[in-house]
Each structure stands twice: as C-alpha cells, then as structure tokens.
Length: 197
Image 1: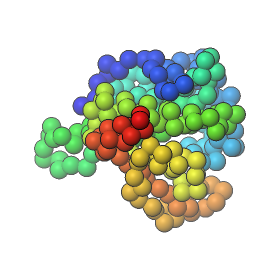
Image 2 (image 1 turned 60 degrees about the vertical axis):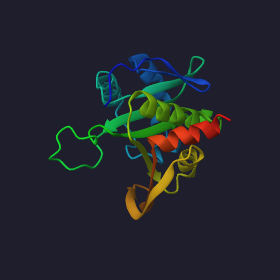
Image 3 (image 1 turned 30 degrees about the vertical axis):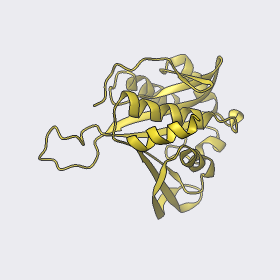
Image 4 (image 1 turned 180 degrees about the vertical axis):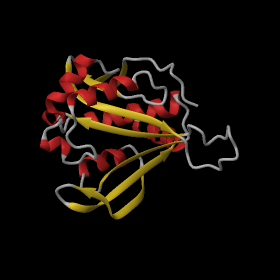
C-alpha cells in the first residue's frame, strides 16, 4: 500500500528531488514547452496555469509522488511516480493487487541532456516505489523512436514487455510504435545490487 509519509526532499544521485512549488514549476516552464522537449511527450504544449495547478494538486494526492529535480540550485528536470491498481479480480475488495503498481516518468531540460540525470531520477523513483511504497511492479512507456528514454529503462534493468506496432499517435509522425517496460520489485532489488557493485 502507498502512504503519504514519504519524506522530501530526497536524493537522486547527484540530484535533489523536491516537491513542486510555484517558483520551481515556473523554472520548469522555461523549457517545458520547447519543441525539442515536447517532441516525445504525450502532452505536448501545456498551459502554464493548468500545468502548475495540476502539479501543485498532486502534492496532496497520496497516489502521486512527483517532484522537480535540481542540481545545486538549477532546475534540471521532473520526475513522476503514480500509484495504480494492478490487474486483479474485482470480487476481492482488498486484494493484494490494490495499489500494487507504479508508473514512472522523467523529463530533462535539453540543456542538461547527456549528464545521466534521467537515469538518476528513474533509479530514485524505482527505489521509492519498491522500498517505501511497497509496490509489486513498476512500469514506464515511451515512443519507440525515443531512444534516450528506453535506454534509461534498459540500463536500469527494466524489461521491454510490449512493442506496440503503430499503437501510438504522434502529431508530426502519425502512427508510430510504442514500448512498455516493467520491472518487478524483486527484480529491481537484484538489479540494484548489481548496479551498486
């Protein structure tokens, strides 16, 4: 089960993850709507007010554990984690499938690309999901052509579970392939031990 008792700020390798504030989100919006950022996002351009309100509302949501990533005082990205039910038979009201899955996402300021920030954020999200929130499984997805994103997932040991043939609509490219990755809690613990060596 998830809990609201997650402490912030928290470390993510060289980064610090902090709960969103209006000031931090204003700094994210400096680069968030740029074409090189929105190219691989499902939600392309966002209205600044709606974006800020949604992120701030998530602070009080026990199923939303999203943060802004900073290196020193510089805002370099965002890290998102949301809790969902896994597939399960609905007649078991309090079954172990309730709140057993997390989805993760990460976004890096293009000026900071290539520094390992996405990997650091994704790793911190996996740790949070497995160690503190106690989920059974974590998933992530991307357009198949977003090589930088799926390389992060593979580097961390996530398994490509789905390659959807032209299952994803892209405004510029039309129907494109999509990938879904996942890792079980016990797989992440084993993978993390290897990464820590």
